[in-house]
Length: 306
Image (cartoon, rainbow, N blue to C red):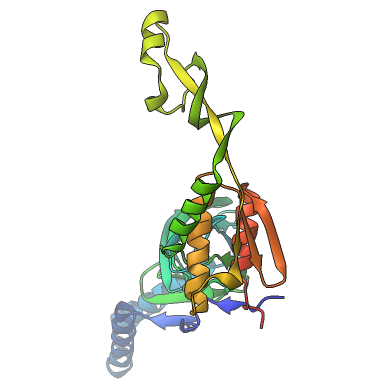
């Protein structure tokens, strides 16, 4: 349904192997000694060349094995906003029965993270911060792993075939739109609810529960009883607000979407039910987390499937 954008289109795919400076010097030294052995017929030099070639063979075997049977999993946070850094959870699973992983580096979206060691039949988790420049649905591809293990003669690469999809919500840009809807909310008024909250009149005095804001502790009641007491307040119920996308007088479409997204996020933080009318689609007012995710997703993919 949606266009999928690669968030790292400029990343050049690496080859299978790359010679390091140390590896290049090692190869040149081996060739030089090999020619010297042939010209002089010295058995000691032959033995040295054989040992050097043996080390190179060991490097090739263990280096290739170090990148085998590795599985990569990527998890995204629930809320991702364009042009805003966010943490990505990366899980590396070593499926080898006996051999651990050494000096493994994972490359993703122009960034890399090092996994120094992962034991056999185990997994290791790390986080890396990346930025998605545009709103919409994106596909993270061109993920690859590399390692210089065991002797830093060669850097070996392996491309990860799996791709990972995510949706970036619009970039949040502070604008005057929120102040207009704040005034509208105040003019419409508010009502109190019997549900507990931290915004209005005192409903009761109860014992302190871990996590209650310290500013709501009732010190007078605490002094009388010798037990920490907390003021339980009633929550406020605000009149619903519906934002009409076409009536927002901002010409630039991306700026309009970013401004509307900012207003929605700020109003929902204050528990105001918010709805959105965008083209022929209507998001009824609500203030739940699922409602927030749905309405921001609608803005994220707006005109992205053309």
